[in-house]
Length: 333
Image (cartoon, rainbow, N blue to C red; front, side):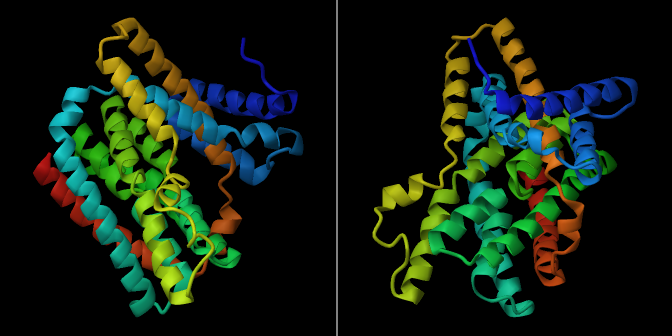
């Protein structure tokens, strides 16, 4: 029997309540209930705010997101993944490298943003959003102001792309698989990628999550690379004495292991169609609760306070990479 800590209950009730309202509105109006959950959460969070009593429970939304992604593995057809595997790996490697190098160049050369902030913007844009910002910040012992600056900029684009990407898909009639691969390759944080993908379709969502998790796996390598570069310039660093494997594993998103395990179990035939359908339904509810929490934590005032130079750097890089990436994905898939 699963027990829930009493301090978590008010926040969990708030998340579930917002999710239920989002489902109701999605059934009445031609709106995707996952997107509605984010919008409702943002509306509540920026008007009434999160009650102190509910803060602990609301903070669990990242756990539900990761659990939902793990459960989604049951719906992934491994034969499709294997067929697309080499193409996906090449695309991920190219996009990650191109984005990081482009953001670093734009920040340092065109917009005169020096040091840690440029690197944190590059990591957040190139890999997995705020998670990458935090991981690389830890590996290079970045200043807290640089972390806050980069994280806020990335959150701004998480909010913008969550709306813009599905709108582009509808406007130009992108096939579901193409959209999912494109979103997974070029959007920033895992939550908005999953939300945008499943807002388009189940197929788009599965491909978006699959590609995004592949991209997330690069976080360990990039964190180690930045640690080595900064340690050399500083003559050593906070993580210089740690082994390479430890440096790779610490920032690695552990839920990816669970996702891969569920994919393996499902594709070995250990789950029947009824089990897979039940897990898909469970994933939908987990995403619903998680996205309500994601919306609650969006702060419009904080996004407005972000300086224009980091925003311009990421905007130019995103438009460049997203446009080129879409052309490549349409050709390859």
